[in-house]
Image 1 (spheres, rainbow, N blue to C red):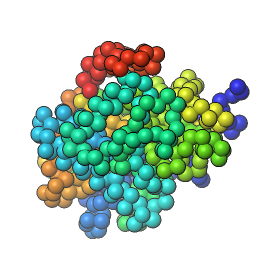
Image 2 (spheres, helix red, strand yellow):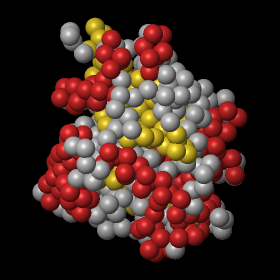
Image 3 (spheres, rainbow, N blue to C red):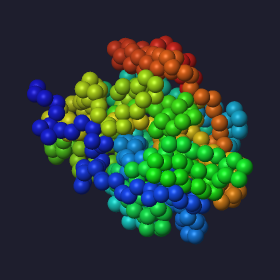
Image 4 (tube, rainbow, N blue to C red):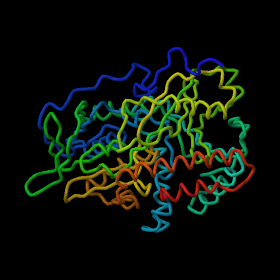
Length: 469
């Protein structure tokens, strides 16, 4: 076999999702000191959805968004394109504090959020290849099959009914090598993530929101004495009634927040277009999103232009919470993802890797997402989505709207509101823990694949103990 790369392959350059027209030129910088009602730091999904819902609710509000690069530069423009209604956090952890009913309500709100994103994209004319085809989760060995059965049983205990999660066959959906079982949920939609981010940015600009790009925030100041909350940049300070931090995986770069959320790297590849004959062998005609039950799990979509976009953790963490924001991916990670892809879909070996990229997502120490607003300090934030941010950011934006406007709603009573967790350990403990966790997960997957045993590897249970997840 020749090179796994296409002749014109790209590594980095933000992501494949910016292929149409290339990486956008950032807009104007903050022109100087400003005052507003709400200042939002970060023009990813969380910041843009918050601005959108605030302006829809109160058109008179003056909202400013500050962005270091350009709208959609971070995870919002690099993710796998899953608008998935899964809970971004541990059900058991939420329930220990707030009870089962509140946790089920949060899960139901996540289900509704998928339809909300689809609705807004359609109503606002955002063309982002949105198709609600659900999500298929597959098991490829006996240990994974047993975990899949446990997943269904656990979901039923937490309020998922027979329409929310369906045990299904594969041949009439997607033909995957070595598959031994699958479940399908309707609560997921495919999206071209960068198109959603850029389209949403244009919509909020049209509503009167000012987005200043190429404007890094150096410091966020709470309300103190006679001084209002503020965000300080090299080009001036923005004062506001509220300052909302919407930086997710980039939060560690802000002073005072270095250990709040761990910036976890995730990497993706996309193939050259597959031929009709290959698609006939694979199936995948209903635009389902695809994941598996491995510990070192993958995620994939069939793109609107006939490719497979395929992701996984790659090199999950860089020492000191450093962020490689250019998106370049190590060759060994690209090769690993290619092996995983072609192991699932042998017919795809006729294709090549057209583009590879990486991005970061925010992981809290207890793996539970949060929406926080403190009226006394004037500061708020949302994030820690653990890889479920495409949908969860929308729910966060609607919740922040209600919190900023001091409206008591069903959203403001959900158990992730004002949820606070302890910080990550200092280095080198943080780095050692993450490296050990993923090494154990990779070894556990290898053992399970080579064995006929239906028991989850003890190595994976050791990794779970390290993470507390």
